[in-house]
Amino acid sequence: MREFELEPGEHVVRQTRKHWFLFVVGLIPYVILALLPALIAPLMRLAPPLAPYALLLDFTAPLLRATLGLWLLLVWTAAWGALTRYYLNAWILTNQRIVEIKQRRYFNREVSSVLLDRVQDVTTDVRGVIPSLLGIGSIKVQSAGAMNEFHMFGIPHPEEMRDLILKYVPEEPPEAGI
Image 1 (cartoon, rainbow, N blue to C red):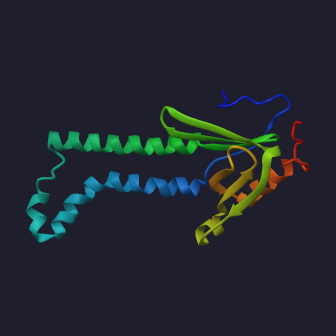
Image 2: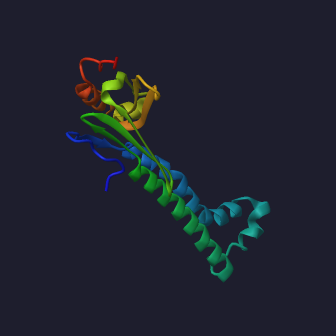
Image 3: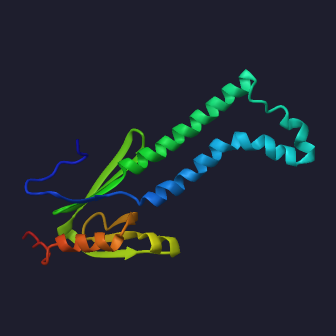
């Protein structure tokens, strides 16, 4: 099931998401939070004033085990939310328009589009060593109309996507109705 309906004669040219590297980097805080309970007691033992309190963090006690389980459940839920946003956020190029699908929260989705015949300028931006090596960048599409700019951040190979967009932009602007 699509988030939008294709018009007659319209077909999907390319669908893309943020680069996988950005997703993996976004998971690092969740990994740290998941490992934090196992690291607290050893770190407390390194600080002499806190060493006696490290003995209190005995995860064989039922209350601490339940607390650890709840902590890991919350961290897992947050990480799953990051995966959901990564998977459901997408940019879709058709032969007539660009569609952006943004998953804000679990039950909050925003779908916007810009017609290719309204596109005035397409700019790519790749900044930094790692983005240059991995081919991660952003695209800014300027259009005529109510929505002046359309941004795509962190996409793989932005130059290819720019060239594809420009391939489907009509040569002549649409005529204004009189």
